[in-house]
Amino acid sequence: MSSYPLIPVEEAFQIVTEAASRNSQGREVEEVSLSCCSGRILGENVVAEFPIPVLPTSIKDGYAIKSSATLPGKFKVVGASRAGHFSELENHCCSETAVYVTTGGALPPGYDAVVEIEKIEKVKSEDLLSENLEEIFIPSTTIQKYADVRTVGSDIQLGESVLLKGERISSASVGMLAMLGRKTVKVLKQVKVGILSTGDELVDCSEEGGKAKLMEGHIFDANRPMLIAACKEEGAEVIDLGISKDYDTEDTNGMDKWLRSLLDADADLIVTSGGVSMGDKDFIKFAISRAGDVHFGRMKMKPGKPTTFATIPRKGKTDLIFFSLPGNPVSSIVTFNLLVIPTLRTLMATSKDQSVALTRIHCKLSQRIKLDPFRPEYHRALLSYSDDSGFLATSTGFQRSSRLTSMKNADVLLELPSSADAGVESVDAGTLVSGLLLSDLRNVSHRIQGQKLEANHKHNLAHAKDYEKACLLVCCSQPQEIKHLRQACNILDLPLASVSHTFSSVDLLKKETILLLEKKKIVILASSDPSLDSILHNLVTDICSDRLIPGVAESLRQSCVLPSITTNPLLDSGMSEECVGQYHDSIVFSLCSLTRLRERILWILNQNLIQRI
Image 1 (tube, rainbow, N blue to C red):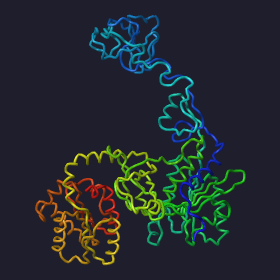
Image 2 (image 1 turned 180 degrees about the horizontal axis):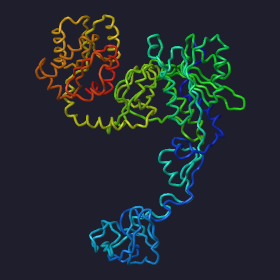
Image 3 (image 1 turned 135 degrees about the vertical axis):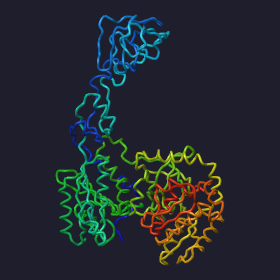
Image 4 (image 1 turned 180 degrees about the vertical axis):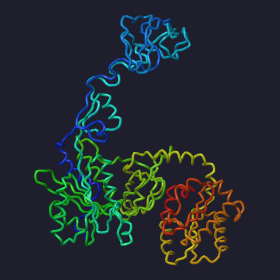
């Protein structure tokens, strides 16, 4: 039983940001070149020392004239002003003269309007783009002063505050600094973050012969490279502290030495992963409590319950901020987003008014999601967009905390209550929920395009309503798999139509399949024996070619219900997303890997291939 109480995530957020605020005062500034400043935090206000443009310039290719000139009328061309080649043309400006100008070319003194090439009808030469014209005719009756002219300071005024201290420097900001002639800029010094993984089982992915150790019970360390990348994305300087072994909680000398090595790293913040749960080798809480204050050791959330936060006093320095994140990679990166990113932003903030939390949005669920009985969950999801519903959230699938693929393309962490708090066991499709943005939504546009293509086939989807929810026809070669399959199907709310311990008759399988299809069922064929894949493949082929049930294939093609999938039995990958995107002519699946069956069916559900009927 842990001595640390479960605290809400909101309380944990308040604790870590208040601790970071105490450490953010008086952050040092350094001067860097423009080539090195992108993503950094400005340490000064940038004020324009000259206006932009410095001279009035033309917005279009055309002819500069005086706006007070008589129109329509003829004008003598007295010269040219191209971008980068300015001529003052002294003593030539009058109401009857014009100057050929290109886009960006400066207007000579006295000229205050530009007539674009397209509005000049009669000239003494066919070449309108030449300054060698002796005379032009402008048929317009009026022209406004400064027409198609960028006046002095119209983009940036002299003395204008262009960039403010505390802003993150974007690519556009770099361009503005260059536009103002800045070679260098003052930025806040980066937060130094030490990243450490713990665990005797961990192997560095770059270690020679590392793969051989996997068969000895080791695993590659995913957390440290992942957290290092996440810190760099936030503009932090990273200190790679490597992998630490586990310590017995009674080995106080070993733990003290371990902690001193971290204090000597000269970091503003330490982030460790692993070693914070309830095992006999989970030593982190014991180690840091000997030298500092553990502010919390558990959070009421899923995933990430054992997340720990502490501060450790240092002589002559600010307190060392110490995060110990869970060892499971999803738990680690989720809690990093919820707590470490706001801490980094607080340390770099120059104003208390700056928002440091992830951006919260509201979106509708595209599917029913079961709630955790006791803990609020941060459910990973993809975002898409519908003109009718706005943002739609679709689960990334199986949410196990070790399954990092659930986080890979996630756009948002859905904030789902526990069933105890909500009073229901699940939230239905269409429910409006809040979520914290993880991405910049670049991929959402692709999903929007996919939804628009799907909308073009809405008239066909009426046929799909004739089909009932998917059922599973399984051929098991190992009886012990049946229990796991039943559990998976119950969780997925998929009826398990038939389970055969042995596959003795192709005709029996065909008969069962025909019966289900005639009942308007979606059939998912699966086998745990790769040698049966060719049989299932042939069965799928027969169905798709109408050789099994005449007229079925055409009906399925009209309904656009599901793609046909067959898999290579040598690949333990189930079906690929590429295959799913290519075919829309059948509702029969062949899966060769029951070890990935639940994950793959979840993927199908998440793509709305089954749920849309």
